[in-house]
Image (cartoon, rainbow, N blue to C red; front, side):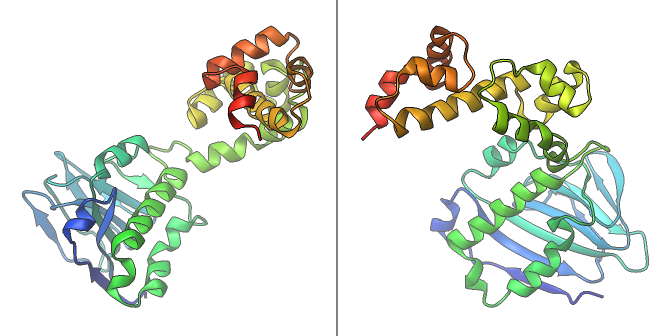
Length: 278
C-alpha cells in the first residue's frame, strides 16, 4: 500500500497573480467521506489509486475506479465516499489568475469522470509526487505553477472521456501520416487520397481523425507543414527564388504558394525574408 502524504502551500498575493498556482497535493490511503455543500475554494482534482469510491456532483453519482478521476471548479457542491473497504485517492488543488481560461483552452472536462491507461504517467503521478516532496517551498511560486500546468497537459494528452480515445492515442494512430508528410511534402501529388491510402482508411475517416486530434483537416495540416518548411528555405538561402522554393515544398503554382503563405502568416514570402533574414 502507498504511504499517505499531504502538502498545503502558503498562497501569497504574488502567487494569486500567477497564471496557475498550486494550493495542495496529497495521497489519502483511506479516503474518508466528504460532503461540501458549497464546494471547494479552488479547482479540485481527485482520482482513485486503489479501490473504488462514489462521487456525487451536479445531481448525479458516478463510481471512480483506479485510473479514474474528476475535476471540479471552485464552488461546485459535491460529496464522495468509499465503496470498498479501502479507497485510496490522490488529489491536487490549484487556482490562479488564468486557471479558468487555461482549463477551458485545454478543453478539460469538469464534473465528468476521466480515465487513462495503466501505462501512462497519470497512473504513477502519486508516486512521482511522493518522491518529489522535500520542503513545501519547493512547490511555491513558479515551481508550483509549472507543476500544475504539467499535470493539466498530461490530463489533456492521456485522459479519455466516455470511452473516447485519448489525444495521445489519436496522435499515435496518425504517426504514419506524419512520417509520410515529413518525407513527401515536396511531392505535389501528395493529397488526401494518398494519405488515406497510407493509413488504410477512407478520406472521410481520415478527416475525422485529424479534426479530433488537431481541429483541422489533413489538407490544412499539410499546407501548414509546407509553409513551415518554406520559411526554413527562405532563411537558409537568401538567393534562392520564391518560385524555386514554391516547387521544393510541393506547390505546382507559385502564385498559389504566395497566396497560401500570406493567408497563413500575414505577409508575403519576400516580406518574411526581409523581416527575419540576416
